[in-house]
Image (cartoon, rainbow, N blue to C red):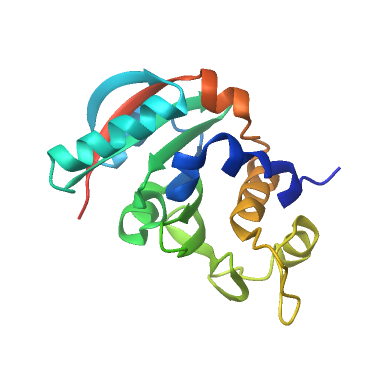
Length: 201
């Protein structure tokens, strides 16, 4: 059964602070320590649960005058999940494309102003980039490879405008389709995350 945006309707209700602005990234066959190295990060104390991660991310941003971003990481089978509250390093191509060398990098982002993006990078190549709210406009070397999946998952194309914008939730569903990794409330509430911070350039 195909995962759709409807399967992530819980996200905004259960995690409102994180849902305001975030970047979720999944990296294939790299450990959290290897991802940290590729992002030129430094270790930070481990944290349990999304609420603690969000609080620490805002504290770090204030302490560093916005120059460092907290990243919470955990291994999920062959993937490493990265969560950036109020962050965007995962979709920043001058960081993500080099970091994707030899692997697959799937990332999606929303900020407090409603801007959003989805990035699929593979071996330093941008395979797909688009704004989930405007899925008709796609860039990359394979911009249409997932088009049928995107329609089925819940992205709205052309004149098909929904009463409620579910494009951020559809991005979660697309990432799950591409990786097999489901983001769940239990994962966000109960995981003890390895944490690091990286410079915002």
